[in-house]
Image 1 (cartoon, rainbow, N blue to C red):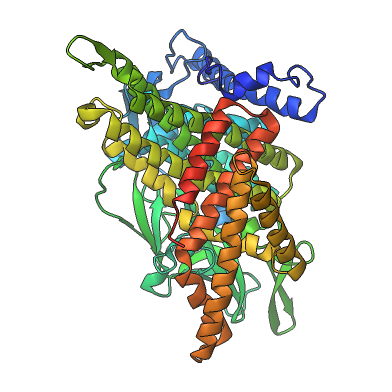
Image 2: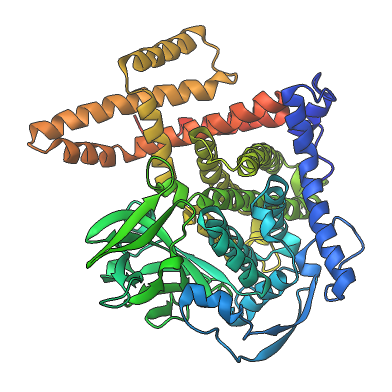
Length: 630
């Protein structure tokens, strides 16, 4: 556990004192017991992994506290062969060429000490830190393929987000390489592709994930212009491959984290066979291939130790084996003079985009979890300062800043929010890890909870940082305070792995589909009237009542706007789009209330009511009631 002494009124304290405590045969008790120990268990497993590597190689130095597993106390000191590559035979099947030879050797001697990492150094040197961690076995590829490994993977991101060991750039590199690059291949690749990946990974070669395009922006996935067209190798040959091409500037892959340092990448592109598009598919790309064009996005306000690239492809040749082929493949067949490229897929339909981009879900969990871990560190530093800062309250007395009512209120609200979000995230992480263990695609309910976690955890962290900085006084301007440009990492969290606005729209569209039938609308009306007539709007029903009331208002607004657009002569699809855009503020208000309700009701269901959940309810209700004007 990142913090062993939760307050007496916290969720976890409430669990310990509840009748369910100790009765692990009870479903809720089992979940709670697992949650209470999950942080400490995750850190212990990570510590054991580091410790074992230290004893074996002597290349890492750790502190004495077995749970003080922070990369800032790790001494990176290891020779790294930049020219390392997989064997020629293993690489040949993928790129059709010999392995890259030669290269230089570089020794890294870098210790971050007890302070946060330098986040604006040279990206090329920073990338070598991840190479060292890969070769040192910090986290194996098993960490993203089974239940215990996934929990370790989530815990590693919490470690990197702590204030005393803050490594924002390294955390992003890790999730890009492990989760997006390796995770996509492990989920969608053939056994041969997985074997190749393990060799690449063990040799410290880095990967990137190329989905977002300039023209699509936050709608990446819904709009993919990059194409991978099937072409025959020779005019009379029986083999073929793919020509990866960027047809226009809007199809350029953009904001590709680790895009300059990566040795390999996975790219999402439209698969085209005989002029027919088969939809987005995923391909492995050697980033050193002729025709791959990479350029830096430019100097950022901070976090320049992480390279972000624009990537385009000028008719890059990919072998047939580059298509991730666990669920689909292209098989060349020759019948006399006729050559046919046959598209095959497992099951009743080709792989969906949800299946292709499923690693975005675990990425969203990493992001939301890191945002809360980051905020918890800021809260701890701010509280320590406020408790030691004495201020005059009259001519004769001083009190600590933390004891003043306005500051005490802010500190308690933020702490309650941290505890509730942390509990919700741990529950969702366990559910996701269980799905990974079973080899199942997450169901829609879990996808919804992950979206709610990603949106509201990040928004809560941003809002809380503003409140803490506002009320702590001039300390918020000091370089040694937890405020400043590093907080921009939360803006990264807001639009990475699915922009928060787009996820909010997804949540609301799902709600509207669930209430598309007249019977569902009648039940919604009945629930709202029953809650209003009962007058019991200060309990757990408060958020649900607000959500249902806002949803009814949105449904009426959309219906009226579509009717008015029809009267102006707009086609149905165009009218619906315009109505949706005009109702934007109300859409986001419904999404916020819905997410708050999901978080609060889930935590209270599993942990019971506590001071934290009550404070969270009050904060969330006030936030939702102060939405757009009606």
